[in-house]
Each structure stands twice: as C-alpha cells, then as structure tokens.
Length: 287
Image (cartoon, rainbow, N blue to C red; front, side):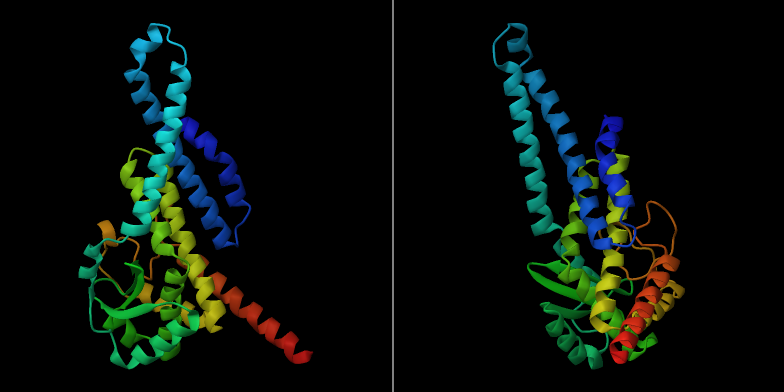
C-alpha cells in the first residue's frame, strides 16, 4: 500500500520539483499530496472494515454489496479527510502553546512598531515574550500571536527586529498554522507512512521560505532578515520537541526530515531578492 501511495503522489512530486523558486506554489502542491495520502489511507481502512462487515452478504451473493462497500468507503474517507481539515483549522495549535509565551512583550520599546507593522500588513496579532526558543508565531482562536525572546530582540538591530516581526506576521497572514497543523495531524494519524512524514517536513520548509519572501517584499529589506537569521542560527537554542517543534525562527540542520530550509539556501534567496530590488530601483530611477 505504501508503494501505491508513493505512485499516486508521483505526479504531484514531479510538478513540485519543477517549481524550485516558488514556495507558495510548492507548498500548495505539498498540501495536495498530503490530502491525497490521507484520502488513500482512509479509503483503504474503510474498505477493509466494510469488507469484513459485509463478507457474509458477499458470500451469499447479495447484489449491490460491492457498490455498497466502495461507496461507503469513499464517503468514509471523504468524511475523515474533512474532519481533519476542521480539526486542523480549529485545534491545530492547542492551548498548550500558551505555556510557551508570557503576556508581556519581549522588549516594550518595540510594541508600538509591532502594532504599526501588523496594521500595515493587515494582520490582527498580539506581541508576547517567547518563553522558549527565539521567535515564532501561531494563530489561536482566530487571532495571531507573535512571540519574541528578549535575548534575540536585544541582539538584533531595529531593522533586523522589524524584518523578523514581518517574517512572523507573514506566517499568520499566510495561514501557516493551518498548513503546519494539518501536516502534524496527518503524521499523528498515520505514523507508519514515511511519505506523510517527508511531506510534513517539506511543508514546514516551504512555509518558512514563503514567509522569508513575504517579509522581504513588504519591508524591502531582505538583507536585514538574512542578517537576523545568521545571528539566530549562531546562537544556540534548546531543541524543542513535540508540539513546539518547528516554531523557532532559525535552523540549519540539513535533512529531508528537517523542519527548516537549508540556511545557505535561505540566505542566497534573500540576497537574490535584494539584488532584484536594487536592479528594479535602478531601472525606475533611470526611467
């Protein structure tokens, strides 16, 4: 069955590979692959249960049993997939994450600039101090939360802090809590499927790259974010497991199961964005 699931996801993977510089499209493709995996496994499970339940009727030659089993399996798989969507939307980030933040902001002096930035980006969010990690964001009960540790805030310049805040607000604007929460639920529901584990990690990486791009486009300062990432990754932080895994800003471990993009790749992409902005600005000035 794993081989069948891999074969069914092959077209999506080929399209994914053909979009190396478009994290938004790659993330959408990965979510489609994730939903396909969920559908395949739930269809199989429902088919086995219904086959066992109607085995006697099938042996007795009752008409319509095969159609009943197939139709029931299809409906059950659709219902399960829909339920996972609803659970991800409503409970992807449980209340336990409240224990990862403190109510006071990391640095009171940046609260006003944060509020202005959130308003300009059209994001309803509050700033809190991170009790673990360095910087992360999530959506809880319809409102965004951005958490920043005092240590990382004090180690960054004002431009770098603004770039980091824009990165985390981009996560909220792009509804990344939902995307990551759905991937996490799928892995918990089907821990035996290696494809889902790989897709979950890839979704995390693509959403990070998308937030990098969104932040850079909005602030116009991709190099400030690149500098902040280098500082964050140079500062050791405790490894966060379980529900908090993947919520920190930095990460430089190279692996297919890593929740973070390769640091060098992120920096290169941000430098390319800075070059494009400079070229665009030069063309505009010349005109």
